[in-house]
Length: 401
Image (cartoon, rainbow, N blue to C red; front, side, top):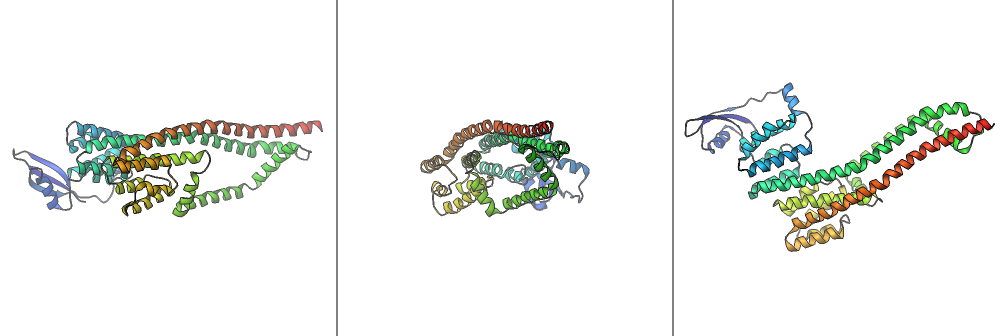
């Protein structure tokens, strides 16, 4: 919408100037008069077609989740102290150091001063403020409990960030060891083994030495074909994951893989229950909460199950009965959801499920890390040891001859 600069005068004769976002000049003037001011002049701000270097610098950068969480926590504290939303946004905009986040808060502040609701202003930046946060804030605005909702939202975002950090941490070390193993094998095949092959050529070699030389020769001669095949396989996987139907089957199969499967299943349950409970606690209806929760899930099979649940819940069926047929959720979770439906305390019941399974998820991740780390180290040591053994055995065979 257009932006207008408005000049107005109050009852004491003090002149003030403000910026208003409105559909037209009349709407801008009405917005100013609603504050008890007399409008003197309204002028539309000219929009410059090009983007200046300063504007570009303000708009680029990364806004981290912890910065958004801190902003929401401070906003709740400021609103709790009794100041208005406009004054709170002015304070937070002034103290923000992140250049891009400062620009975004400036835009939000300008929208609010123009009479736009906080949820609608934040909703203009979906990459910064998730849909779940916008929905919860909108529910708080409608119910007049914005401060309580912000505290609930901050707790939800902190729990979600902790879960994400825990999952990333669990796969970081195994990934590093795997990359190191690949680099070591590539170095041995490309640089070490070919030099020994020149010395051992023509001799009667032990099986392990001959196998190592043949393998290195095969990999060296067919490196281009292997790399092309590997790139094609990766591209095929990307395409498969991009197709919704295929992704559904892959994500459904993923939860049945030993060791990794239970972690994938628990992470889906924790994220689903945590988000759903937080939304319901904010006063959002069950159907709207399910639709918003669906967008936070990465598992396509779970997303499809939630889509079916929304349709059947609208038809009058209970959520626990609908989710039971998906096969993605545990009996404990379904029982807690059923109890929540019967008691009218769905939000507290699903949040309790989230707390229970979050601890189980953390234990599973710690157990997986404990099991995988030594296996990877032993595997890497075994590869290097086999190469060393084969080369030494070949050199001893030549020395014997």
